Amino acid sequence: MASAALKDELTCPICLNLFTDPVTLQCGHNFCQECMKNFIDTRMLFEPYTCPQCRAKFQERPTLQRNTALRNIVDHLLFQEDQEGSEVFCTYCDCTPVVASKTCMWCKASLCDLHLTAHSKSPEHVLIQPTKSFSNIKCTLHNMVLMYYCTNDTEFLCVSCCLGEKHRGHQVELLDKAAKKEQEKLRTIQENIIKERKNIEKKVQNLQDHLMQITGKAAGIVERVNVKFRDLRMKLDNLDNHVLNEIYLHQAQASQSVSDLIQQLESKKDSLSRKISTIEDLCQINDPLLYLQADKPDFAGTTGFGDNSLNEAADLAEDLIFDTLNSGMISIIYGLQKGYYVQEASDILLDVNTASNDVQISDDLKTASWSAVNQGRPKTHERFAIRRVLSMKGFSDCRLYWDVEVSKAGGWRVGMTYHSIERIGKYSLIGNNNKSWGLRSFNKQYSVKHDGKQIPLACRPSCYKVRIYLDYTAGLLSFYELDNSLRHLYTYSTSFTDALYPVIAVWASAWVKVLH
Image 1 (tube, rainbow, N blue to C red):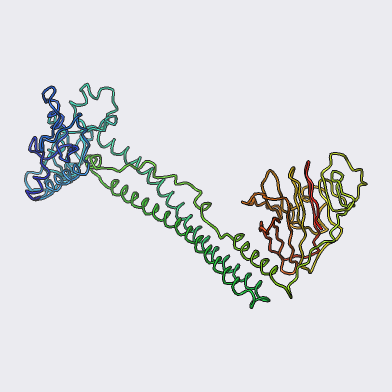
Image 2: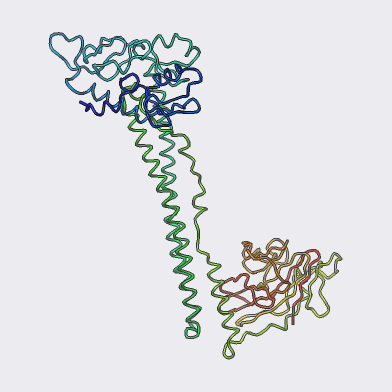
C-alpha cells in the first residue's frame, strides 16, 4: 500500500481528499480544480485573491494551471491501490470464487470468462480491466459511472452530464469508441513518424557517404599538390606546408559541418524513436478510461523536418585551397631571378578572319570593340557568328601571360580556347564547351565558365586591367586583376590536349584591348 506520507502530499488542503484534476497557483501550492474555483468565487467583494494555504496575495484572479504530472501520480496511486491485495473475483460465481477477466462499468459487476459470454453487448455496458473500486470512474457531481467522453471539452461524462446544458450540442461518444478514435489518430502519427525516421536514416547514410567523399577529395588534392611541388621541392617547402595546412583546415571545417548535421539528425531520430515508443505504450493500454485519462504529449509538428539537410552540408573549399597554392606559386615565380622565367606574350594579334561582323578590330590588331554596324566581312568556316574573335597565334608547351585593358561599360569575356571551337550555335560561346575557358564581367560581377558550368566569383571588379596566366605543362590557367599588384580571381587546373588561343568576346558598348 502507498505510504501515509505520500497520501498526505497528494491530499487537497481544502477538501482533504486525494486531488481531483489538480491545479497549481503561482505560489506553487496545489488544489483540486473545483475546490479552488469555489474558494475564489466565494471571496468577499474587494477582498484580495489569496492562496488558501500560504495566504499569498494576487492582484488579479489567479490562473489555474493544470498539474498533469500530479494528476498522473494520483491516478497511478489509485490504480495501484485498486490492484493491490486480493484478486478481483467474478460477482456471479457464488459457489467457487473465479478470477474476473472484466468489470462492467454499467452493471458495476466483475465477470469471469463464462459470465462474460452471456453479458450484454449493448454499447452502454463498457468493459474495463477488473477493479474493486468505482470511486475513480464516477462523476464527482452526480456520483454516477463515467461512460461517455465529450470531444469538444475533453471531459468524461456520466448519463446526467450528457443531458445537462453544458454539453448540449457537443460531440459525445462512448468511452471505448472515443478511445479507438484516439488510437487510430496515434497510429497515423506513428506511421508518419516511422516514415520520417526512415528518411532521417537515409539522410544520415548520405551524409556519411558525403563525409567519405570529402576525405577522398582531400587525399586527391594532397596528391595533386605534391605533384606540383615535385620539381621545386627545395625552394617551395614553406609553401608546401602552408597549402597542406590549408587543406586539412578546410577538411576539418567541412567534416565538422557534416558531423554536426549528422549529430542533429541523430538527435532528431532519437526524439522520434522516443515518441514512437510513447505511442506504442499508450496504444497498449486496453482500458479505455485509463488510456483517455493518461497524459499524452502533443505530437503535432513532429514530422516535416525538411529535405534540404544534405544541401546544407559543407564541402571542401577546393577553389580557395588552389587559390592559396597558385597565388603562392606565382609570387615565388615572380621573385625568382634565375631559372624560372615567365614570358609576356607580347606578340598577340587578333585574327580578323575569325572576327564576327559585330566586332570591330583596330588597325594594330590589338583592340576588339562591339559594333552596331555590320562590318561586311565574307562568311567563312573560320568566322564566328556573333561577338567573338580569336588571336592569330596559339600556345603550347610554354609558360606565359598576356594582359588586357577593358571598358567600363558593357559586358566582355576573355580567355583561351582550342582552335577547333565551334563558330556558330550555343557551343561557340566561350565556356559553353569543354574546349574553352573564360572570365566574364557583366553588371559589375565576375564569373568564370568552362564546359557549360558558370561559377560566380565573390570579388567584384575593382580596376580595368586583367591578366591571363597560362602554364601549359602544369595544366594551369589563371585570371588576375592587374592593378598596383596582382589580385587572383580564379584558376583552372586540367590537362591541355591542344594549342590554346587567346579569345575575346564583347557585348554592346564594350571593348577589350590587348596590352603590349
